[in-house]
Amino acid sequence: MRIFESAKLKTLCSFALFPITMIYFECIFRLSTQGTFFTFATIPMLLFSVSWGSVLCFIVNLFRKRKTKNIITAIFLTVGAIPYLVEYFVYRFFNVFYDLNTVFAGAGDALGGFFVTTMELIFSFDGLFKILLFFLPLILFLIFGRKYLTTDRKAKKRIITSAISVFL
Image 1 (cartoon, rainbow, N blue to C red):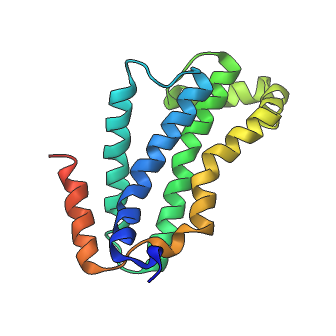
Image 2 (tube, rainbow, N blue to C red; image 1 turned 90 degrees about the vertical axis):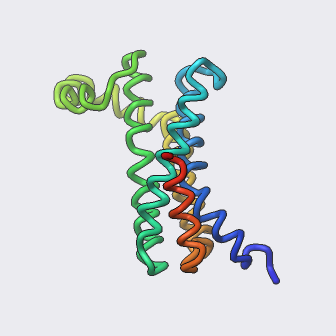
């Protein structure tokens, strides 16, 4: 029996995908903007990543069909990377962190006035590399991960129970 055919491994992959991905996003973002990982905010970041990842896991596992789970997982991995990329490029441009409401409220003025500079920043080697890094979980999921999400009903109950226990 191949190791990736194991039901327990599929359950682990199904449960750990989003928490690990959220921790990965936070680590890449923090290393890219602050240059260090271990700060005072590391513990809250880890707790946020595990809890938010568990919520996403819970949502995906509400569905039975593998194809539906794969589509929703790909959407979550895509949508999850976008705010980190936006914040990264805003930080690179202004050297300050803004909340997403401020970014999107002022985006028309910034894009109109700084369009060329913004495009240079995005299409620079560093910008393209960061885009690749933030979309790496999606790429890996599309290549390898689609067949490792479980559709087993017993495993589904364990995943949902584990996701709910994160909040208690």
